[in-house]
Image (cartoon, rainbow, N blue to C red; front, side, top):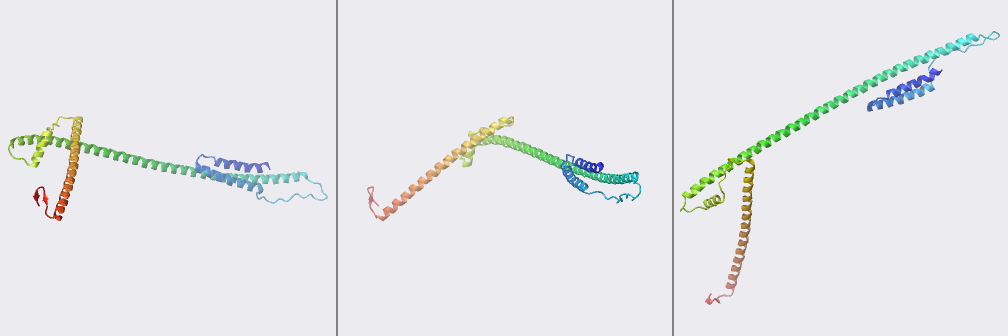
Length: 266
């Protein structure tokens, strides 16, 4: 009868082995298997396998009791019960092994699926990083090309300005004695204020310095222009005030008729 109590504990240890993997899914599956195995263990404790009913040996009346026959029949009954328990044990063990194999297959399948998902995600992330790097490289090339074009245009404009100012000075010398227009006066003034630019042999830092000087000059001219405009607005306002006063004085004179003003009759 000892085997009858040891077999359920063997089934319980097998359930604990099923719940052993460290994977989260495998752990949940193992916990479910442990609960299910413990339930089967309780059912096994409170239920006995079906065995054939053996009639107890009858003691014949008035005859000699054959204890050897009784002992033999008891041994046969115990042996039959033992074989039944062994068969039930191996059948249950076979089912547990099949469940364990199925559990291992599910764990391996999920692990491979998770590895495939991670591989796909890694490839997508790598492609995204490559696209970002290519886009950054393309923008840097476009920015460098744009800066180079701007520098070339600036050099061309500056060199053209130097040549134009030199030609303008030559024309201005030939026009001496003639009356100049406002535009010609403006050009002449600018030519006198600014020397011709020689930017052919200048390096980048020298060009930057020359551009900064020109910007400072333009800023100064704009400031002076603003001051002159404000001064002109103020003068216009004063002129308007004076005209209003004159008109008011003339109306006052007309209302009072003729009178002697300043020694003369008005």
